[in-house]
Image (cartoon, rainbow, N blue to C red):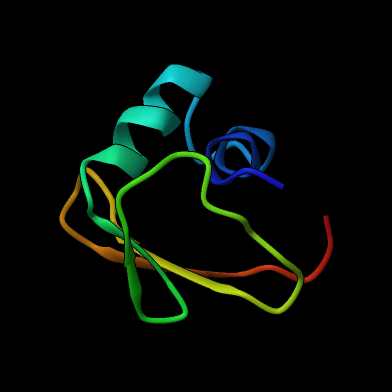
Length: 65
């Protein structure tokens, strides 16, 4: 599944466009790898790491799609 769609489906962002911008900003990491494209693949078992608006680091483990 595409990263931007996943972030939108799990309600990390309210709009898919915001998820695309977040992914392309290069602030997201999947299993420690920096991601710079919204079409990056997300699979079961992946760990997403990013900073939210409050400056806190959020970690999301993908258990199911």
